[in-house]
Structures are given as C-alpha cells and as structure tokens.
Image (cartoon, rainbow, N blue to C red; front, side, top):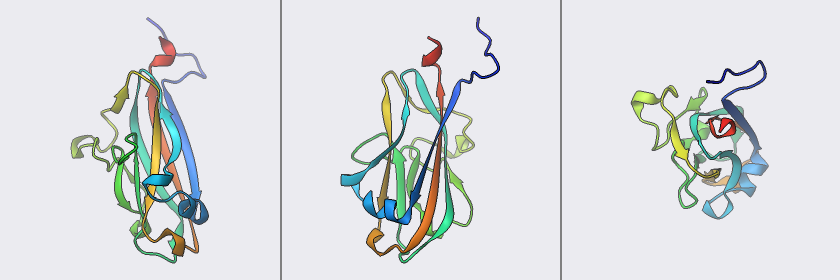
Length: 144
C-alpha cells in the first residue's frame, strides 16, 4: 500500500491555449496539434473547453479532441466553439451522458498516447478569439 505525499497526485492536467491565429494555423485533419499525452497506465478524467475571448469573423468553428489521428473525437466531438456561452466538457464519443461529469475514466492505454486537437470551419476568416483547453488525466503508471 502507498500513500501519496503532499506534492504527489495521481492526476495531471495539460492546458493548451489557442488564439485565433493558432486556430487558423492548426486547422483540418492535416494540421492536428498535440496538446497533451495519456501516459501508459493512464486514462482521461475530463476535458474542458473555455472560449476565453469570443471568436470573431467566422461562425462555423468546431473542435475535436481525442487520440485517433483520423478523427480525434473521443473527448470533445464537433464542438461548435463560436456558439458557446459557458465552458463545455466531456462531449466526446468516449464519454457517455452517464459519466459526463468525469466520474468514469476513458481513453485508458497501455502505451503513451498523444492527445490531439483538430479545428475545422472557415478558420482563415477569424479576426479575434482565444480558446483554452484543459485535459485532466489519471496517471497510475508513474507509481508502477
């Protein structure tokens, strides 16, 4: 048996900030951005998206977050970011309505796996905006 000491935690949080130029530079499946990693022996607890500065210049901006390079939507799926009125969390394919609060872990892996963000829409038309993405993972592997 082990007890965590003051500065130890089984959870790790990655935070990635995209301004409107970053969104335009990292759009489509050809330009997905690595925003964190699910470590070996870990899983995702929650993913939160916050539109810190309203996106301006386009009204069709969507976001996917997940681990599948072809369609990373396990954690956030086709989120209409420019229509958000409050932070949104755990809307991806791997999160069910019953665990939308992050109670159940998803994306468990035996190997280190990158977490990807993919932007879509008329991103070249954006003139303002900032979006913050937070990914909290449970990392049991670091205690193995």
